[in-house]
Every structure is written in C-alpha cells, then in structure tokens.
Length: 427
Image 1 (cartoon, helix red, strand yellow):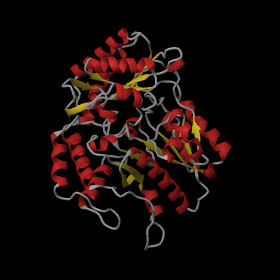
Image 2: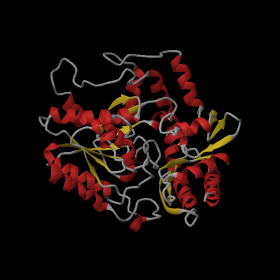
Image 3: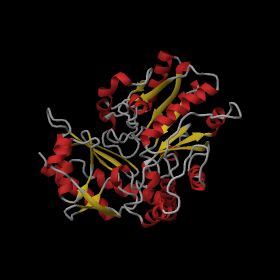
C-alpha cells in the first residue's frame, strides 16, 4: 500500500465502504467526516451526482479514444475550459493521468522549449527543500523531502539543485495567511545562478503552498521575487498546483491568489474532484509555439501516455469544472477562509501545538515531536480523531486539514473540536 506502514495496516485495517458529500462510511457502518477532501482532491465533495452521471453516461458512449494521431471532442472542450480559468499567458494544455506525470511532463516541456530556442545546454532544474512533486524520477529529483529521495539517490536526474525552504517559525509562528517575513529566501536563487551559471538552468519548480511537507505558506513577496529572478536570467518558472488548484486557496489557481504568473502549471487531484485519475500541464503560449517551430511534418514532442485525455476522465473533469462554476465553490471557499482560519487558530495553546499555518481552506497544525519518536504523536492524534468520526491527515509532525469546498461552518467546528479532544487525550 502506498505511503503506508503495511505491517501495521494489516493488523489494524481501516476500510472505507462508501462516500457521499462530506462523509465516508466505513466497512463497519460508521460515518467519518472527511477533513481532507479524500487526499487533497475531492473539492466538490464525494460522489457529486453531476459528476457521477457524467461518468456513467460517458463510459457507455465512448469508453476509450486513442490520443496518438486522433482525438475526441471532449478533450479539446476541456482544454478550452481550463484555459479560460488560468492566467492569460497560459494558452495550451497537455493531459496526463496524475500529478506525478504532470510534473515529469512539465520538466520535459521545459527542456524541449530551450532546445527549440537553441539553448540545449539548459538542462538543470532547481527545486526546493521540503518540496513534493510526486514520485516519478523527475519529481523526486526536484523534490526535497528526504524520505522520498534517499532510497533512490543513485537514479536521480543529474544537475538538480534546491532552494532553501521558507519555514521560519522563530519569526512567523502562528501566522494567519502569508507570513510577513521571508521574501529574502527567494534571493538564494541568485546564489544558485552564480554557482551554476544561468545558461545551464532550464526551470525552477515550486509549490505555491508547500502542502505535503506540512503546509508552508509563501511569505509575502516571495513568489514575486522568484518570478523576477527567473525573468532576469531566462529561466522558466513552474508552479506545481496539483494540490492548490481548483479553489483550494479561494481562487481557481494559487497563481491568481498570490498574483504571480508562472510559465507552466501542473494540476491533477481537484481537476476531476478526485473521481477519476487525471492530470494536466498548462503551458505558456510562447513555449508551445517554440516547441511547434520545427519541421512541418513529424512529431514535435516525443512524449505522451496511453490514457492522455481519456474520455471518461475528461467527462469527470468537465462535470467538476461545471460544478465549481455553477455552485460558486471557488467563491464559497474564499468566503469560508476567515471562518476556517478562526477555527484552526483556536487550537493555539492546545497541548503539544507549536505552530499553526493556513491559507484559503488549507491548514497545518504542527506538533512538538516526542523525543526519539518523530511522527508518533501525530499518528496517535489521527487515530483518535478517526475513532471519533473525523478524518485528518498527518504529514510528518504536522496535522493537515484540507476539507472539500462544500464544507459547512458547523462541520469545520466539529473537525476542530475533535482535534482539540485528541490533543488533550494524547500524551
């Protein structure tokens, strides 16, 4: 099982039987309030009837369409609908099947772009410490979570370097929204440019909010500085929005929330509201045009997947985008964000809590680790909450909350109450 202590799970299995709205039902009939939208992905809630019906109708009409040398109308319509949501420099889409595939695709597009422009020596990527970009070899190379990298170090991409992370609890503990201090962390990119020479660097990739490592919200002006430095040196800027896209920060994309335009954006998860696996890379128009500038005949970009733009996944994504639009879920998330912030920050002063971080409908509650037993306390809190009908997520010594955009204020209160009880109960 992925990212799971398999031996423990076999002794203490947690089995889910069904889901609807904000709730799972376990195999023994208990209802569990989902505080993490499945796994950062079910933004419209579980089993939304419009998405379910779209999938049911599509699978009976066109179950599969090869995307090599042909296509189907739905995927082009979906591309247009996505482009209508994003910053206006992003004009093209490449479809994948997951966030991991989207990241590796974005890295390959960056290399192809520089080669097409006559700069094939730009091979180097800059990631960030504590960054998470999936589990492909490209993603773990630019990622910065040690446990995801150490077993595979012999097969990493060559020439990758990393920016420092932005976590600065000494100055920014218990910040609401963007921390005040830390824009200067972006200046480390100038140091890496000086070390490696800009002419060798293809792209910088960061999550606007580093979620999987424990919800690290970007300091004010930090992303703007990264954008300016990349522009100064001809380096592409990739935002990994696999988690943050589709309303999570109160806008369609975190790029819009923070007012910074990247050159590529990777998405997945909320693209289909978690119903069917699908990912995508949103690409700046000038990158696409450069990649298409070769010979008039023949393949311009030797890359793709059997299931790129799968018809059933496409139907789920189009239905999810329609739900987000028609039910005003992005606007709803923005309106709920202050309520959510007040609730999670009420845990300040609870036992073991050493920091709370939040933006939009994302929050991280960091706990003091037990001596010699890192992550054990958060796992005990997770289990206590689950036993009392609430699902939260652990990531290291941080508890993460990322509820569906359909959550009600009373349900936010229920989640925070369960956490408070668990924190008081867990030694």
